[in-house]
Image 1 (cartoon, rainbow, N blue to C red):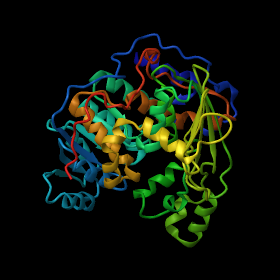
Image 2 (cartoon, one colour):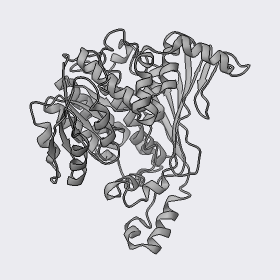
Image 3 (tube, one colour):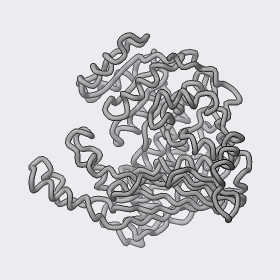
Length: 467
């Protein structure tokens, strides 16, 4: 299976470490074939898989920089969670988090100083779940190692940086029967959950098109000396493509039942020029020697637009711009044969014809009718706890509730691999004059029979919040 699956890398010109050389741009000889066939079956289908239930979910956290500390605090108040380990290469980070947990029932062991300290935590036999919030390049290696040592893995976005890493996640999850969930919090935002439930009940008819984005001005953060350790986020921006596709893509993919009734077929991607990043790097380097290593470098274009065609003929448009001074947007457009939804610009809107958006009163009526059970049960508490307006807590609570009740997770390893693969695939397309490239079928054909995700809580939902 490994050889047949990895054959995709050969026909497309993608290597195991990413894109095969800048000299590939414009080379028609490297254009991928139009079809990739896997001839062997899966080792095990993780879609819809319910791991044995865990009365208590014992968690180890890796990465306590930007996202990790808030995740620890959220998890600390969920019933049945035991925080067993905290890991970061900077001792002050783990010590500060340990102090925040004083007075709670959690007394985790600390792993720090060594670059490989996280491995020791993964090797423990009294941890069930590893929660990964580290720089992107570490996501896949850590998730693979955790699963190989019998742990479920929750990994921040993107779950992998290369196509090879995407396959590693899939193959390891199937072999070990351990979950690998990408922590795509936007799938748990309130309007996204509402429109998913509306779609599942047929309000929009047949979905024909979706749009998502990550348009968020981060240029100051990317050049900050302190926001991202070792300037890792700035270094990532030296790649050219849609580097951060999952926030916009995840909710659209769920609405279209991608990997569960439909699959992505191929994509094409185009980036404009870089109008700001290189200039800012050069300006900063002229004033501060710290920035000299980042001067004279090429950075991704301001705006990337990627278009995807699915096997059933649907289309998806994704955009990425974290430099230009735009108003924040993930777009979240769902377009069907009977209606449509649009989240940005605010406020969210629903239309059931071409005549215009529903009035506030009509919207409220539909909202009451289609409000998903997870929001009815835990939505207000999630808003109080916080985390991007409550969606982070909804994601964490739902994940723990599924593990404690022996239920399938809403987001599986095939989603983690597919959604993450858009970045390296878009890089290839950008480097090759926006030629189309096939999207791997990480389900190896099981998308035809996999059941759609339905965050309905027909089972479970009994996990309490200890606050």
